[in-house]
Amino acid sequence: MINTQDILETIKMIRQENLDIRTVTMGISLLDCIDSDIDKACNKVYDKITRLAENHVKVSENIEKRYGIPIINKRISVTPIAFLAGATSSNPVKLALALERAADTTGVNFIGGYGALVHKGFSVGDKALIESIPEALSITSKVCSSVNIGSTHAGINMDAVRLMGEIIIKAAEATADNSCFGAAKIVVFCNAVEDNPFMAGAFHGTGEPDCVINVGVSGPGVVRSAVQKLPNADIGEIAECIKRTAFKITRMGQLVGTEAAKALGIPFGIVDLSLAPTPAVGDSVAYILEEIGLEKCGAYGTTAALALLNDAVKKGGVMASSQVGGLSGAFIPVSEDAGMIEAVKAGALSLEKLEAMTAVCSVGLDMVVVPGDTPADIISAIIADEAAIGMVNNKTTAVRVIPAIGMKEGDILEFGGLFGSGPVMSVNRFSPKKFIERGGRIPAPLQSLKN
Amino acid sequence: MRAIITVTGRDTVGILAKVTAICAEANVNVADVSQTIMQDIFVMVMLADISKSNIEFTELSDRLKICGREMALEIHVMHEDIFNSMHRI
Image (cartoon, rainbow over all chains, first blue to last red; front, side, top):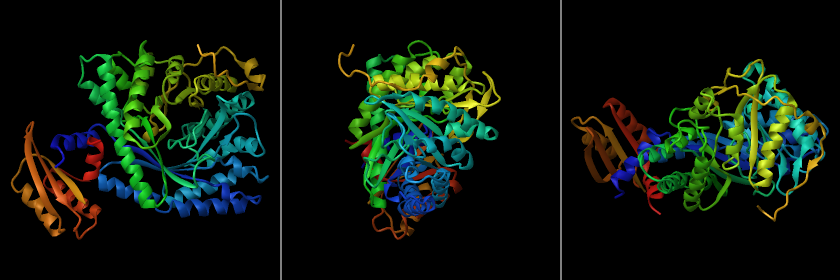
């Protein structure tokens, strides 16, 4: 019989330390739904998603009961909608409505992929789609959007960077009466991955199979509690402890993913090895860093501690899963992490420190609330800086900032639920206007002579 | 197919009897039982064979959960695979 201690450890992880499967995400290709008549395209999109994802939620709920493990979100990611928008001259917002309808019918929490890949330039449909994002996100509630504006191989499309600064402000303004939530559903990527199960940045890449199941795990609370048991251990022992814990967390994700794929009769894609926090007290990445030995997240030493944490999570996770992918790393979303929120309120954590932290972990400036009067060019420049970190370091970086319309530094923007609440952070007001207005493309970086 | 049933809470009369009665009704064979007191909390772990069960796994889980609520205990039923995959390589 299985060891009683192991059984009780698993139950404690789930009941007391908030261990859960953050998401089971079904990736669906919509390439066969392209049509020059947008109404036909909408019908094809709706039909295909509802056909393939008909049992998605039910299967996940059965797995939840069978293994006693909560699956917080069931989601769908689709081919970037710009591919469909390119075939038609009509307003692509109709496609967003079709996605929303499909999400309602299937019962999923979110559907991602209302976006475009423009890292080297805009093709037909890309601009129209990007410009429709604020409207699309204000008239839907489950649709999420992501735009890839740079990559290590292509450089950074500065025209897209400039455009996205404006789009983020417009999306916040269009949803000003709803906590500026539109901006929380847009992610701007550099080196976007094709199999990410996490929102708002999930989309189904063109290199993926027709339909696939990807899983994202969570478990900062479990890691923190494991580290807590080692008050006098040296850093090597801490890394080892995190690795072992990450192994267990990821094994559970692997089990759930393979079971879901089997039950739905579609291939299993990847487990995303992530530490995704929630606003629940105890389920925080910042608290792990503080447990390792920092007074507050954001203190000097935070970047090093995070690098250690991120690496140990991957090492433990890789061993536990047959296929690893997605964003894979510790997430540091400010509003979704009780410890990060406290650190910002206490003045320990600044936007600059967060930027440094993104160089060593997944995935970028995430759920950061900035003052509502922040000019678009400053938001564009924040995107450019973050994209440069990703481009040069061969990693995915992203920006999800929310301009809190009508609010100023120190105010709190409440989202509720998994999205938490974000303190409005201070932004450096010196102008990057001229740099952003130049447009063009930052050339791809040299891949040798690395020093 | 086997499931692990765990019962935690205050020790009272008839816990084992009630849980095994629900199992018997569902034609679930209890293969092994171990119980301990950990820091004043009663912990019982049962290994149950559910391959011949006459009800769905989720139904069994619901019935035991209701029974747990009535006795102010926490009862979880989980497929053994989750423990095997988490704790064994």
